[in-house]
Image 1 (cartoon, rainbow, N blue to C red):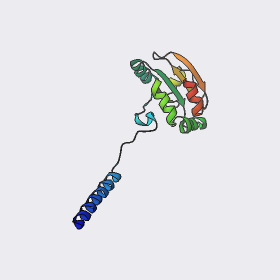
Image 2 (image 1 turned 90 degrees about the horizontal axis):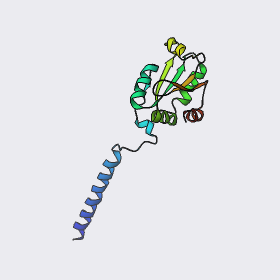
Image 3 (image 1 turned 30 degrees about the horizontal axis):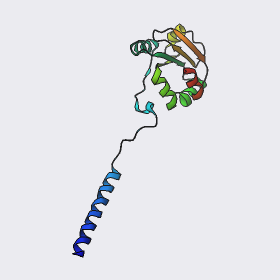
Image 4 (image 1 turned 45 degrees about the vertical axis):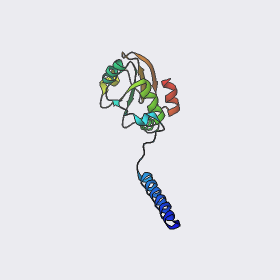
Length: 146
């Protein structure tokens, strides 16, 4: 009887080990630290596209004017516009567009952009409500967004 009991206990323990091994090797969905990581973030390429979408969603618009040759623009892109807290704040309240002043000089001209980077906030109908020129750290950018 003791031999049978030992075999049953051994079998149960071996079965539990197999189940734990299988469970530990399977991928598990864990909550992300930041909601922005879960969302697909979209940068529009023109101010008008962003304004059209903002009017549908009743959100503000943020326009970022930059150029590939601009060191401050590169720093803004790498340090600020890739920051998950910044992206989360933008996606909550804004529709965003990045405009390259060399590719779309007419947009830069129509918004009076003569310095890059320039960040402009518009209401959902396209009226300007704020403007900042130059680089902003992630903390400054979040503060600027309100």
